[in-house]
Image (cartoon, rainbow, N blue to C red):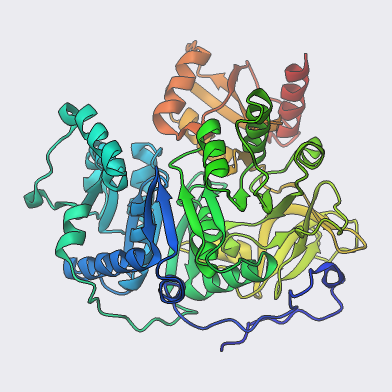
Length: 567
């Protein structure tokens, strides 16, 4: 057993709120992350690991397929420490590849399948990935930018590869004339075929858990350039164990409906790794749609569900419109934490469904989740609070100007320390200097702790916008607009929205002699940004408000946008 790097002293005020059975300190298992899937397969080989459109896969089959994928990657020449990219929605292929990449000794770099060519090129170039698994339908987009990257080998799959047979036949008939043939001479291979041709006899690398990367997860930056967050096997094993103690799972009996994207760190920890701890059944949906999600919760009697406010609003509306058709009675855990929850949502779920909707907080940099409210009805719930730090997590709130540690109810920057904190940003020493100081992660989030040890997140230091659980960095959108010949200057702000968390509003000043329309500018954004980063509105102005030193006053723009939204 390996000890945590940081021990949190017992005087921390949040300890008194811990549920029974949650220790202040955990002795973490010092093994590679893929130990979780192998252990689940050993303890519960015949438990269902995944359900995808009705087709089930047992844990012993998932383990064998991940072993085969590891063997195939090693045959391709993938070595310890190499980055292997995944460009897929939620599907069994993602799960197989995730565990297989780790077993090959490599590092997972997953990406949103909605990314534009520009976004894909940036991340693939930065990571240096030479192998990628993607949908056949996405291959043309990848091929357009492949020469700008180091990608040499492409493995493709179709969303129907793990459909039940009747659905698979129907899908293939419907898409017969759309399908393109891939030639192995072009270094493009078929996942189903390579798994069939491979053995499960892969070579297990010697993993140094605290040094070797399991995941290189890209997140945005204030410069608009993506940053690769380096998460070790140790980081993710620790965060998974913290979740396991905070939200215990009954072995082989839990059912998780998975709509948080696996390409998001929240999907990795709240589904793939935490789920393995209890050999849970993962009911996988490629993306959120209200009725299919409710149908899955009802049919499979789901016991846990994680989502963002927009999803809970949609679920409530659909249940009320379709009385007695759907039920969420089976859910024992209902929560989320990727964006702030409207206060009235807690009352709705308590009064209408008898559910304690619990909110938490986490970052890619802390391997997923690091604060959460407790899932115990008798415990006090304070609206707006993200709850308490997990075991072995130390927290301080500091004054941004002086660096002094602040007291209860004083707002400052949230700083975290613990064994689940990233070892740094990939090839970004300047970012490491800003964010990682003396073992502390300076999160860039503004928050406070009240006198009783409840924590609250108040906002973002760098005006990061939270949309549907994703972090959107204004600078990236501004860069896209600024690069056109139509725009002289752009400023992007976020305003509150009950459905998406925040709404993106862009302001631009046209280049002299240019007269762009909102429609024209939105189209430029759609071509260069994934859907959730595209502004809801683009407002055209003659000039932007400025301070005496000519800095754009974004708070003035934000107030203006909120006022206009209300009128």
